[in-house]
Image 1: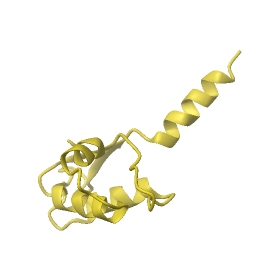
Image 2: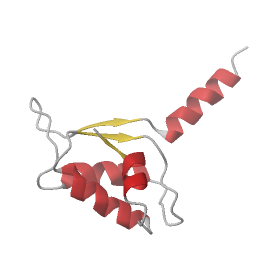
Image 3: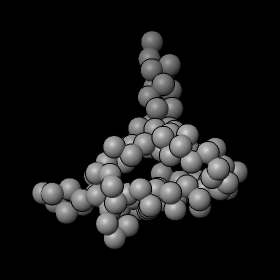
Length: 93
């Protein structure tokens, strides 16, 4: 499983979100799943960063494919979803 946090740790010289996108593309051929477990720390990270990373993972010519459906598989531990969960729990009385 390819984790965004692992890329950021292992490729500490990445300077921009676009560098991260290229690293995801490069690694997608050897991985079956993508886990988006951390928001990239770059100033140029766009609002739709999760979609862009997922697209980079599935669009690579040798990207990981799900054997049954032909679609790449990814698991997103969304930063936005985590925030919504904690917000909804905070409002429960």
